[in-house]
Image (cartoon, helix red, strand yellow):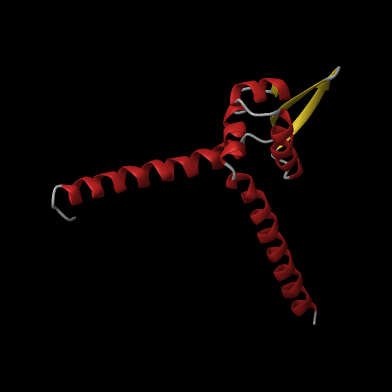
Length: 123
């Protein structure tokens, strides 16, 4: 009986982990959020700085920052009336960079493939 409970608990824990992972991956479904992450890669920035650098309205930016904060990807620091954002864990940039690297490799491979097709060759 105890073994069955451990299996059920383990299964529930794995399912919860998959759900949390899916929620975290939602961060990567918006190009604007990806731009925000890239800006925060090196240093913390105020909401105004991010809005200016991305040429985005603060209302729209706030929606993206809320999602990033709710997912635990960014943290905030208040200095007077100014709110600063930074990455909560530098590992998120590792995930960001791995995905970009895969995409660059795919684009490079696809580019060579399309070049061969346009020249009448197939690999």
